[in-house]
Every structure is written in C-alpha cells, then in structure tokens.
Image 1: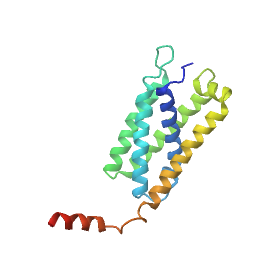
Image 2: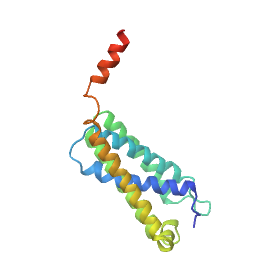
Image 3: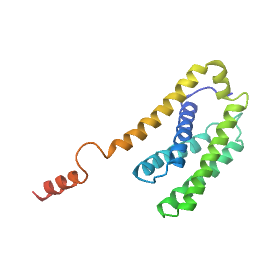
Image 4: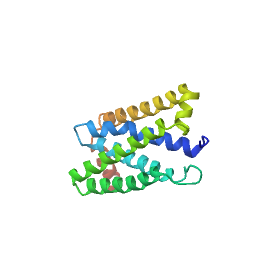
Length: 169
C-alpha cells in the first residue's frame, strides 16, 4: 500500500471533487454561466487527477488505471474542445464518458483490498467520512455562490459603465 502523502491526499480530494461536481453538471437542465464555471473547475480537477496518477505507482509499475488516466485526459480535452466549438453531442459524450471512467476508477480504488482507501476506511472511517463531507460541502457552496453571484452587488453592466467613465476622464 502507498503511504498517505500530499500527492495521494490531493489526488483523492480532487477525485472526490470531480465525483461530486459530475451529477450537478450532468443532471442540471440549464447550460449557463454556472454550468461553464463549474465545468472549468471540473476540467481542472480532472486534469489534476489524471496527471497526478502517473506519480502514484504500485511497486514501481503502472497499472490499467494509468491507461485510463491517459485515455481520460484525451476525452476531457475532446469534450472541452467540443464545448468551445459548440458541438454539444460530442461534448456530452466525452464528458459523461470521462465521468463514468473516473467513477469506475473510484470503485476500483475503494473496492480492492490493499489499496490506501480501503485501509483508511477500515482504520479511520470517521476521517474518510469527514473529508468526503467537506468535499461535498465545498461543491454545494461553490454552486450556491455561483447561483447568487448575479443577484448581489451592483446591477449588471454598471461596473462596465463606471470603468468606461473613469477611462474617459
């Protein structure tokens, strides 16, 4: 088993963040500013999970999970490019496929004895639940903050008028 270190902990937290954001992104009907912002956070976390996995090896060897990471890096990139190009069917397919891939990797990481997560769950389930709860709470706070973002402060466009006015003076 790998010892818990900063790389492994950050990898697990980012993966939990990705797993928590996924349903918000997939099940929400509106595709708006919130979807785009949460999507950029999701993509950044996915890239971190994929790239950090290459430094997490068992007995100095790569496993099929590293192949999944390489494949997921490609599908996330294709999904992002598809969204930018407004090819929504391709975007949906690549992003949902990427989410399924990380869900499979999570199930494997949790279910296979001898890996770090099952050992943590057996030795300290309260810490594992606490970290998972914090990640879910963080996703909820980000989502609610984005929802409320357009309703507080100065009216839309007033900041632009103030900036353009100050530039003319």
